[in-house]
Amino acid sequence: MVQPETWKELGEYSGKAWSVLGPLVGVLVGAYIANRNQKKHWIADNKRAEYRELLSTVHRNSMKMAAICTAPRSNPGLTVEQQKEYDELNLEVVQVMDDRLFVNHEINDVHLGKLWVEAEYALHKHRKVGEFSMGVGQIFRVIRVSAEKIID
Image (cartoon, rainbow, N blue to C red; front, top):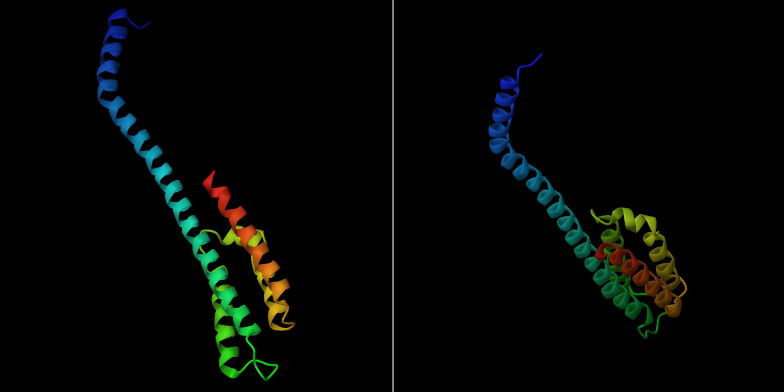
């Protein structure tokens, strides 16, 4: 059986040990929570930046691509220079969709690449600017809905 004096000494020792270890444990727990929250904010900031860049690239390039395809010309096809510029604009959109690090999963889940290919096909092969515009509008809506999820 443990003597009452032993219990008293253990209580005093535990109190002294906790007075040293308690603040240390508090600091470690606080640092862990702060680090975790900081990482969440960092990821959210990067996702916002990638969505913004994606929207900007799709908007800018789709406008230029539509202008190239609807420009008045005597020849029904595109000139070599126009085709080259069109292909570069299209490639830039595809690359921006493919090389996003933080939103790649969301982009793939909503089949953004497929939506772009369908819209671009309507413009390039059939010169259906209205169908292209509707497809690009759908892409904008999908991107914005995905981006709004990180705001909440």
